[in-house]
Length: 70
Image (cartoon, rainbow, N blue to C red):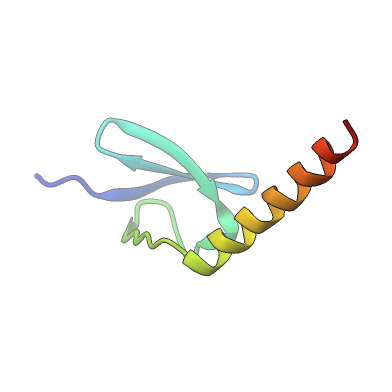
C-alpha cells in the first residue's frame, strides 16, 4: 500500500495530517473549506524564488541596520 496524506482531524486552526507512521499539523487556512476528516489530499511544493529574494533583501537590510550602530 502506498503512503498517502490523509486528514486525521481538525484542531483549532490546524489540520492534523497522517503520512504513514508520521503525523504533523498544517495551517487550516491552506486547505479548501470543504476538506473533511478521512480525505486523502495531494500536497505539492514549489520554491517561490521571488519571495525568497525579497526575504533575503530584508535580512540584509536589517543586519546592516543592526551592525551599523556598533
